[in-house]
Image (cartoon, rainbow, N blue to C red; front, side, top):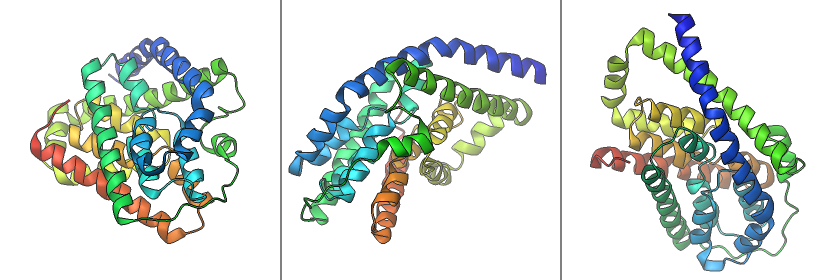
Length: 286
């Protein structure tokens, strides 16, 4: 049985490879061409920062959330704009959904909810947390953080960076799919589904905690669990809203106010949990 599980996992994973690579190739090309322009837009966004931040955040790359953290540390953008970027960013969710050939309408609805929650939360945070913008901005340190936490995307070509991401996420997917297949085979799919669906609030809170892990593995885990039917829409959204890629790591590194960093982390978790519970209780599906 274990041999069959290994074979099925590897076969399913290999089928995803071309879709993953094509998706990352397109996304890397977009980021290489627009990342500098995007940062300039965020700098000049003013009171409309949360709206722009929420829209920009849907691109699943390390650059935007890391750049937002640096810009906030220099008080070039507001806290609301930063949180909007963090909430809307999808990290590895989008490539996985595309490679799994999930319905385009489903993908759009998931992204739309993340963007809307991000924008709404961003405007509310700015409304109650007005700060005077600073003019002393520091040099972005995306390259350094990518080398240590994610990739060498600023130094590699588009093709190399896309290949790097594809291999990395392919291995994550294989490992997580294998673990899920083993769990389902030994524990039983119905039993696991009942366990998760029977505790929607605890499941949503736990998913949001997983989302806070500053690594692409968290978004891979949450997306795969949702696709396997072991995680509800609300719990998945709670985790993906709380997740910000490496954005939080950059924030803790470049922003000297530790209490403020903790408040932002708590806000991400709280917003993710509240949104997830609302979706679970309303019976909303994607």
